[in-house]
Image (cartoon, rainbow, N blue to C red):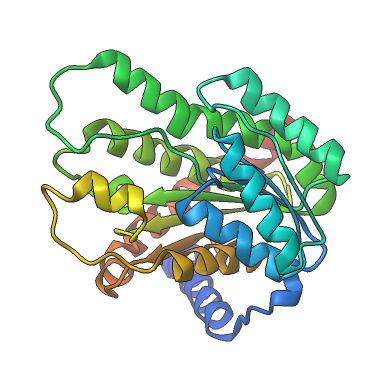
Length: 292
């Protein structure tokens, strides 16, 4: 009886609440109207499509990537599509100083921040791992550490706006894949860090949501070129993927699964992990956590 009262009933209540919420939530483009949003990796692919969707919804858009020429075109397009404002700052996420300072500059230009969409990655060859440690270090810095740096820099502004962090990840960060070991490691790291931080925000009453976007193969030119020799599959449309990422962030969902197939969403959502996290959290003295 004590087990039922202390554990099973609360767990059942949580899952019923999650089911009820997810069944009744509704996205409206007006949710993004006037919002101040950063999009990284925005010069092409998914990032560019995210910027275009946000512009059509009337958001203030700040984009970044390495190619200044590409960003100028993105900004011009965003203004034509109806963005409340559109700006860019070019730079490389290999430079952690740039990553940190970019967020501060973006916040100053836009007058705050409502949503941080972290989407950038470094070029990743699809091949067997042969011991290239410098590349492992580089990919971890760009695909993972810069995400942490930017989220830390953005947090004061996001606290003020009760905003959102959207982390674009991959199914390679949920399941093991051959030929992608360094990339997969960086994506697993995103899940571990941001899922843990989400729990910390919950217990310390920080009203900033974190959405982890677990993507399958998307039909961007970069992705298609990278896997063309080893993987024959029609990717999911990048335009639809970008819209689903925005929806998930606006609705403050914990995770988004996006692929041409429904199987990843059915098989990779892990109720066992959610139950264990719930039970493990109950072993902590939350008051002491907050006071520390």
